[in-house]
Structures are given as structure tokens and as C-alpha cells.
Image (cartoon, rainbow, N blue to C red; front, side, top):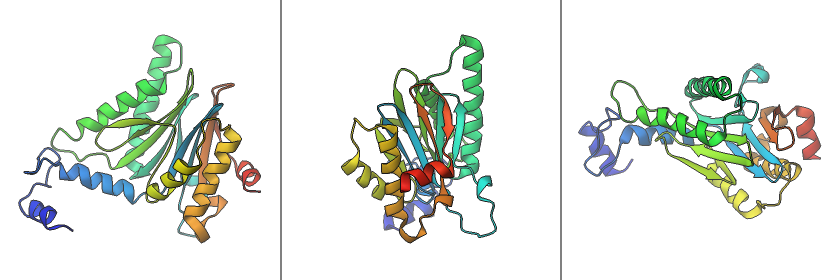
Length: 239
């Protein structure tokens, strides 16, 4: 821990998310971002015919039923999300997103676009960096959706969001991003994207790689429907 950060702690600048340190930092928010870095790895890839989300479930106990560990969440037919950080925090945000998507569908008789949903979720995240009595959400979300085209957004604990062609979050974020930056191509199909995503996770996880650890989904441009990736699908792409 750096000397400056230690002195800020001693002076109490990290006791509330509403308190700026003398050098203009919100330390509780920075701690939340460090929590995300300790979460399991996940990545998203946009392709010319859809979008992919893949995540490592990191099963560390042999007797755990892997199907009960959920990392990829369906928000609506055309929108999905994957989380890194405190998954219980993610669940709260996902449930809010699901309600928003259904309200939009009932009101306008059409599916919500991913960009509008991302802005609403990030508004909630931002509120928890500004008001006292609650801590920031310790989770980052990759939110993928298909309307007129495939789109992929990253949201972090500050409430900031960015749109990406391909990106990663979690403990192996830097290594995965390096692979994606070198090997991603705009003309990739969903098959190409799946092979790249699985290959990237395999290289990063090394001897710990196992298909049982992977969770994922695709949303294609043809029917714009969420589809969970099965173990049979994963085996096809690892041959």
C-alpha cells in the first residue's frame, strides 16, 4: 500500500463514498474497482452476425453443483449480461435491468435497446457513489445486446460506461484484453468469436481450464434471441 493511500485511510477519507480525499479521489469507489479485479474473468465479443459473452465460473470445490453458479444473465430476449466482482451485487442490478426491460416492452410494445438500458443501470451505480449510508456496487457488468446491430458495453462501479468491439473484465482482464487486441477482427462470425473467446480463456487459465468452468451465451442477428451456450457447443469449438 502506498504511503499516500495509507495516510488518507488514517485521516478517514475512505470511510464514506461521499468524501473526497485531498487529491480528489473517492477511495470507497476505488476499493470497489479493486474488488472487480479480484472477480472471475469474463469477456464479450461483437461479431458481424451477433454478440458473445463468456465467463469463468471458477469452481473451487469438487462437490459444488456447477449448474447453480450463474455468471451470465438474460435480461430480455435481445439483451444479456455477465458480471465480475461481487455477484450478489450484480444480481440486484440484473433484476432491476430485467424490470426496466419488461416495463419498456409493455409501454412501447418493443424490446429495449442495450444502450438505453446501460445508461439506466449506470445511473443507479452513480447514485451509490454520491449518497451516504450505502457503499458502491462492487461489480462490473458487460452488457451485450442486439437491435439494429450487435453492441457491447462495459459498466464499472463509478457508473461510467464504454462501448467496445471486444473486451474483458475480472482478474485476468489485462491478459485477455491483450489477446483480444491482437486477434480480434471486425469481420468475425459468431463461430470465429467463440473460438477466439474460448482460446483466450484457455490460454489465461492454463492448467485450470475446464469446460465445466465456462458459462456463456450468444445473441445472433437472425432472430435476436438470447441462447445459452451448452457444453456440447463448447466441445465443438475446442476440437
